[in-house]
Amino acid sequence: MELRQLRYFVAVARLGHFGRAAATLRLAQPALSRQVANLEAELGVKLLQRHSRGVTLTAEGELILGRAEALLAEASALAQDARAQQSEPQGLVTVGFSPSVAEQFAAPLIIRSLQRYPKVRLRVMTASSPVLETWIHEGQLDVAILNGPTDPSRFLLTPLLEEPICLIGLRDDPRLSVERIDIGCLEHVPLIVTGPPDGPMQRILFAAQAKAGRSFVPLAQVDTAGVARQLVSAGVGLMVDVPAVARVELAAGLLKAVPIANLCIQRFLARDKARAGSDTVAQLAVLLRHCVTDTITHSMWPDTVSLLDEV
Image (cartoon, rainbow, N blue to C red; front, side, top):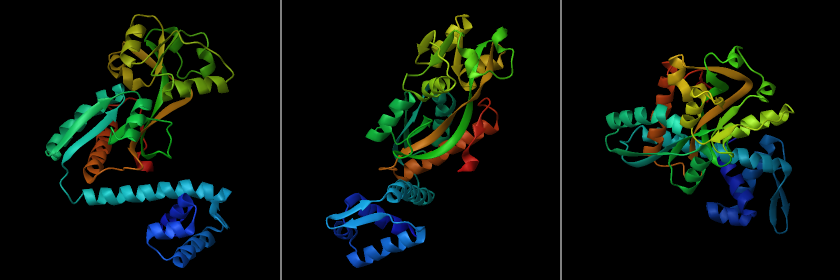
């Protein structure tokens, strides 16, 4: 299987016509038909249904189309990353983080960028993950760290890390005397949940609640982990979040975090598929990956599992 075959198939599928696709690709139509037929033969499935007005996708074609576009986007990004190693990055790069992630990675990224790429100007923007997704799609951000789950059809994603979702409270709270807590045990706990209602943290939490057949109403919903920590420290309730948002208080022994069984959140390095960015963006994405790796290696991001070796 060749990348050009996938590129030809995507063009035909999107334009719905071999003739229009051939003109766009500047390729003879018989040659285009032959390449698509070769791809179908190699995959052992029929991808396109030919008819008098053009072509439509088969069920198999619908499945392969998304995978093919993802592979082509990844190949394009790989080529950009390779070229980026041979040129000196320069210009403005906008990077997005959620507030808690910015606390950990924004300053190290800026410091490393200033040392390694003095001609690059970084602009760091913070917002919730859904807002960051919108900004990437609108072109306001070149690269961001998103909290999963997110839509792989819209973004070029690199898995970075996975964190347990925990119940966090005062260290002497008897409800935190276990090593792990089941989602069903949260039904009568005064919970403080963080992030926007459409954010990944609340989506994961309430999906698990529904799956377990339980129902609970949070005591409070706050956008930022800082406010949640203040409420927890005041004894108002217990917060649901990743341990990293309270790493200072946890390290000082003021708070305690207990993992909620089978609940975790992944973070991804994301770029828009339609505009993977310049070589400079590619270089900064590599630098950001290094920041993540070093942070996890030196145990500066509590209870985190790196996913970079799975890429």
